[in-house]
Length: 84
Image 1: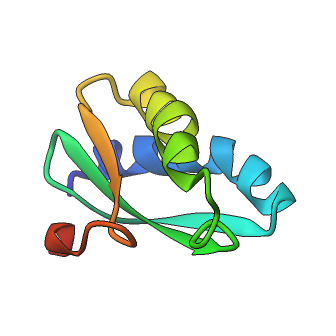
Image 2 (image 1 turned 180 degrees about the vertical axis):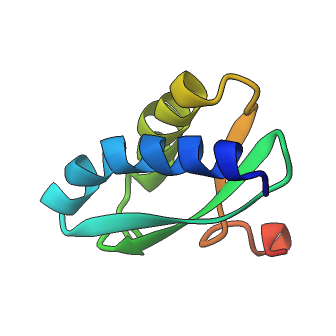
Image 3 (image 1 turned 120 degrees about the vertical axis):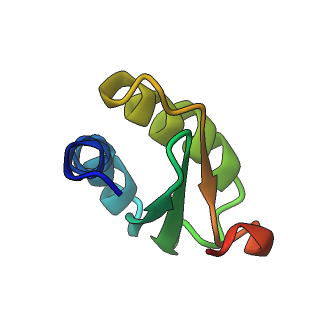
């Protein structure tokens, strides 16, 4: 993963992290293949009924703001086929 790309993704995750932590959750970057970012939801985010909405409306939108070439963000918690 290129350093600048990784740094910008991490900035995006840092922006959204306080909202996740407020609900006892967190997020970590797992990998990216250029257009797809793989993250792992942690804490209460794992079992939250609205985690996919958070992933798309919060995390993906924020990542795209920092890294416009990203097309999607997926959670490896839900899509084990996405595990590198």
